[in-house]
View (cartoon, rainbow, N blue to C red):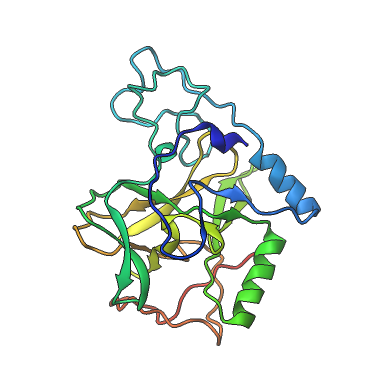
Length: 260
């Protein structure tokens, strides 16, 4: 497994009886073709590497690996010196001083920070089981039937094809309902103080990572928009859950991303 070669500093625990994991893991096999393809990606290794000199990656800038990948951190193939590299962040785990608490706003568990967080800072990975599209659809339907909380998060990435007329889409789907980390407790807001982005280290499947969208004060609850800026957000369904964020721009209902 490509992701397991890094050391993750994560001493947080679940307040619930769930399996706490340090990073996203593959769903159990359902013997489908989609699963086999997903497993192949999961076990693949990105061979991109930086050519930084002996002093490491300078000027606090991420190494440029080329292509249209949003963020690629340095990995074991890079020539930079680990002790000086400034392009290794997500791979070392979530930031310290986060805590799960009972949120009065959402009337559920949430995550807040004990200390202030600067704009742009990494907070944590949204870790869970990596799902195929078919399994994600099945779990979402089951959650609706049982009235269970739906933690499935769908991240769509788009890059231009060679002819520049169409977008190529890569879908990453994470479900932390059974296995996850502290990221599963971060609530949705229509006016969030965090945002998510894809970060790759040494695997083509990205980590879904939470970053501060603005400066965040100590004791402030962390939240991100569950729909993000995805173009594939479903029209509001009659059974959509009410949004409790209380923001001036609140849409009134939780967003739902389409799986297509």
